[in-house]
Length: 422
Image 1 (cartoon, rainbow, N blue to C red):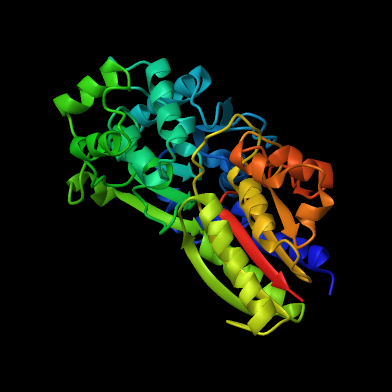
Image 2: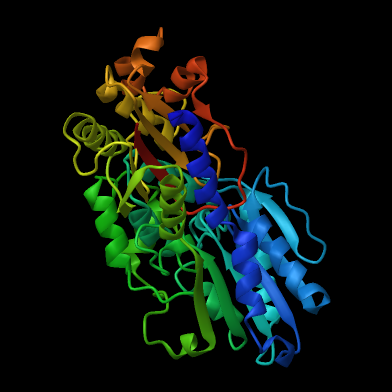
């Protein structure tokens, strides 16, 4: 068996299963009510936004009255009737503010006989910054940076974002009322919670101002965030729409893609190549290096004892881990995952671990992730432990030519981890 060739083929199958073009096309073609509306607006945001918008145009064509979707800068998709606005990610920028304002403008135009289709995928929250006055974009950016540096989870980030925003936590649905709203959602969060994906702009929000304050207190940030953010949260005025609000009687939130679907496709591809296969979980969270070491331990258990599967074996898992930044190196959580695994795999033969982001971009790099095996550390002239300490995984794998570079995939359903033992 060629572990590296097999790993890349399995990753390819997982990405194909998360293809947003097929997902959006199927969801829209199933609808029988599209001709019942006077006008159709298409709005949205996310790292898969361009691909989703292009698919919506292919199905709806001239029935689209107007549209605007915020996408990550560098998105290469082309559309005719839907504006695609490139914006900053993961740190929001002024382009995102302008795009969010345009989306809000379109939603405000929609009436009771109109349909608003909202296309949401991972990254939508950062791509649609609409700070609630007096909070400014710079202050929202600083708050986001502080939380990211502390290793806050996506759930924690979104709870806070909703309460310093005019857009998130069901507030987009409120803007579009009384129009019918249909959101097609590609999940990038553990558990596929609709109120968390993109900070739930069209979903009821169970979190509160108190929830957001608790996040700040957990990381000791209440006195470190900008005063405007702290004051807004402590004042606790104008809550987001909650479950049970009549507003949501005219809102449909439809999950069209998820990490689990990609894991199932990866497992099928591995079986076709002769591996005994186990899907471990699609809900993997925690500190990246710790989770990677657990995967390395599972790989060692297979190699030495044939548990939980005898070789040839493939373990598939997914989710979204977090990195607590302690150094000033270059990398992303999937590259850091592979580096931590490489250290613990050292000397283990015929064993490989791959970790990759399904969106094709891992942190602020051009790589989706990296691959490691028992020889990775010995092949490198760098100090693996030191690079891990400095969060400097990118140059480590770049030197070995073991980065996984897919380019933007047009989708985003969190991360994929593979353990292969031949």
